[in-house]
Length: 265
Image (cartoon, rainbow, N blue to C red):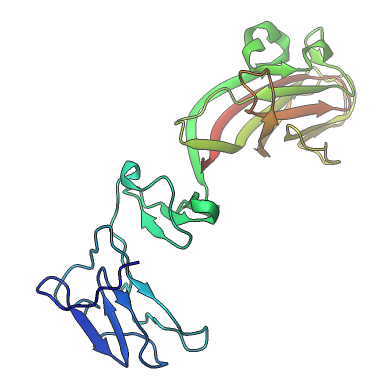
């Protein structure tokens, strides 16, 4: 922490309400009122709030009487984008940065970085060109996506009580981790009424229905949002993002993926 509070031509200190605040300097509470500048004025008068590698630290205060209070109709705090590769690999706890793609980077425990995506549910939903992951009627053509349970497919149908484990097969960029997928699941060639359940690999199978049918020779489909779990295919690929399909009655199963739910690694 830099505690040099000597005024200079490029480091000015604004003192108001009993608190000193400066760029690249320590901030010392002189009274128990919040730090603030004159209405409409920046904290550092007439200069960009850029401290380089130095830190500005506010100490003291409480939730009821904070050292720094921001209020107003215009943005009171603006973080200018920093290229991802320019953000230190380890950030002190409480540090903030923002990337050019508007992701907020937070310094967490033990210096680890956490990313908050500024999109739906703090994750990122990415549409992908529709890809067929499975058709049990031509299982050999999709063997690369089948992690386990292929022996449960007989004559093109996944048999009653059996489970198939599948991978989504791809990730748009290595810095993102898929945690869910939008799947269109179709059942065909049914032999009796039944239920298909889609769920995350590694999780206990829930007692729910993703697709259900009520008789033989039906073709039905449903768009399902499925969480992805971790499946160890082999030692070289221990964390394959995968999901599972379980049926209570024999049926052919077709699965297409149309979008992934991603988070930062």
